[in-house]
Length: 301
Ligand code: KIV
Image 1 (cartoon, helix red, strand yellow):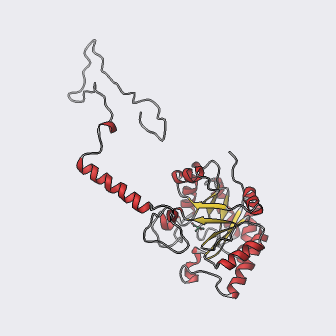
Image 2 (cartoon, protein in one colour; image 1 turned 60 degrees about the vertical axis):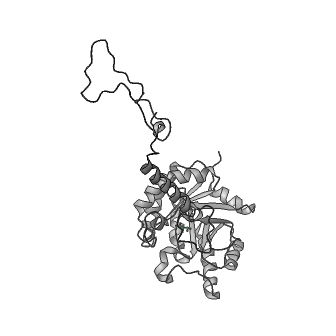
Image 3 (tube, protein in one colour; image 1 turned 45 degrees about the horizontal axis):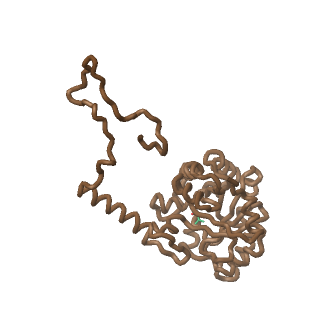
């Protein structure tokens, strides 16, 4: 199986092929998305919202991203894995940024890191790249700057802001970024950034002209019925499916339909009370090989 490298992503842009990216936070979903052919998995700091239940990405820590990244990379055989650098893991100094990016690769098993910000972070990007770590940039609506933006607001709607984003995109490309996420910006601006850059752009709420698209997997799977922004397409009614499965489980427990005979294990020779006494000539029967090694995910056999 050919792994998706940063060079494979660059070739996709050159050949006009779309890049698919989804967020992933654990090995089970990572395995499914990888097998489905998703090119890149982002261990996004969106985990702070969808996994941890915070109202922003700001509380997410380095240790938490490392933990989720390790889980994701265990589920992956083909996809490129990129880990988000959480809030304040790269803003204070380039030295700290290099060390933290290194942790995501060495401990988390990431193939690249992503950070938010424009030309102001060009030096940080080039220091991380010089350390041998590929960097994905992130422009437009940058959730770690939620307070500066005054909320999750589409960016680059006026000429001045749009020109600033174009200049930032160029600065990040020159600093060595291998790809850019373009989030929450007008379709026309994302198209122009995509046209002017030689590195791939990956859009979310930035229109169809980007070289690829990314979605938060919980949004794609429709796991939060209360969150339906314009840029999300739900490919599954995940919330409905999960809730009806949980309701059926509760019902079957109260009716006694689950667990049924086929869900249990037997040891007919087991005598628990009084304690078994071995009678000469009588063997204790054990018809289940409880010590056999498990075959899959620790399934008892
Ligand atoms: O954290 C995240 O999931 C992201 C994507 C929305 C691009 O940064």
